[in-house]
Image 1: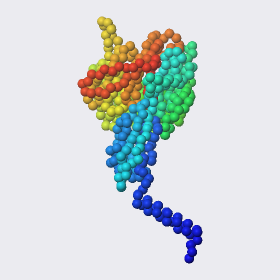
Image 2: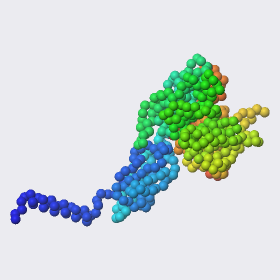
Image 3: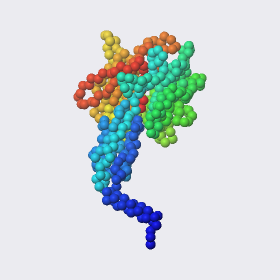
Amino acid sequence: MKLQRFDLMAIGFIVALSLALGAMLVKGEQVPLQVSYFSWEGKKIGLQDKIFTLTFNRPVDANSVTENLEIEPPLPGKISWKGRQLIYTLDDLPIYGTNYQIKLENAKRIYDQQQIKPFVSLFTTRDRNFAYIGVNGEEKGRLIVYNITDINQPKKTILTPRDLVVTDFKIYPNSDKILFSAYEPTYDNQAVTKQQLYTVTTGFQVTPNNVQTQRAGRLEPILDAKDYENLSFDLSNNGKNIVIWRTNWKNPADSGLWVIPDGEKTRSLGIPGGEFVISPDGKQVAISQRGGVGIVPLTPDAGTLEFLSGYEKSLGFSQDGKYILLVKDNQDYTRSLVLLNRKDKTTKDLFRTLYPIIDCEFEPREKKSLYCLKTDLIEEAEGQYREEPFLSVITIDKTSDIPLLALPNYRDVQLSMSPDGVALLFDQVVTNPPQSNNDLMTPEKQAISDGQVWLLPLPEFKDNQSIEIKPQELEPGFKPQWLP
């Protein structure tokens, strides 16, 4: 039977396809082994980013990947696997303001040892930003964000308007907004008592995929001072709860703590006010009370009320909430800094002093030390003394105390640890008796005539090593706080 033209074409196509399939079987799979997805590709990461993934298009020899995966600068971590997906969990904090390169070469396919297509990618960390309150000129009393990623070309953004005088602030965990208290300046010397709570956008918009920009300076009122004076406030590390100490204008006996849960209305906790700090998860507040420190639940799943007898105040919680720092009054008129394990209630005395303990911050990288502001008495003349704060590092395991830096002239220094644990911010202000209703004021009702923000790079410490570090002068201002 004579074949038709169409039949010949079909047979030719079948023969060609068969030859192609045969060649493929002889040569093997030609799609190269490669990384098909990297979860941090071109992104900016922060403290909340602890895991990245690499996904491969073919099964890969895990040992060859582990041996050849490189990150520069080094970023230690642990590798685990889920099928063809590598999961990398950080052991250390990334350094802010840093460009990282991840590279993988010479890894092999699992069944024929074909080498991977070389993979190189970049990711970066958030910029090194902090906020502070200005003291001079048009910056006076205004909230400012300062970017020092490039220390030679810093960038400044003023967030709040001229008609608000900022007294204090707390930063939300994604750095997208700041909670602050402020009042409108008037000729009335009681204007500061009318401070209200607001939020303001910083210009950063953090999404699950990246850090984008948004308009900075967008204000939103949170709590007015119509019926109550707002004395002090705190924001939980996760941004879920605000706690405020308030006093009723008409009935001063009606004074205590209130809470604003995220997205809910303000409600009274029914307990007296005092010095307080919120746990990192926003579920509890530690408040100074007569004879000790109370741990008060803020949410239904926070457990029951606790009372820690014999303590003066709490300085804060560890980042995981497992420990709390307490100042204890001793019978010999000294004060002790005590680390309390909240699970088994064991305590550890870290040091004793005759003088006030101002503040302490946990070191976030190795979590084995604290940076503390303490005071000492300095003799100025015979029989005349003044309190002088100084900074020291306390090792938790060995309870050693290494003096770092004296901070003369002002007792109420504000301390802020950088999120990556490599530097401290602190301030020093010059005070005078109040002269006008427009003066910036300290908590002790002294007028702030000048102020300076300082940056202190933190060295690595070794036993019995004397440390000499020099702070760097940054901007006129006070109350500096790093953006997380």
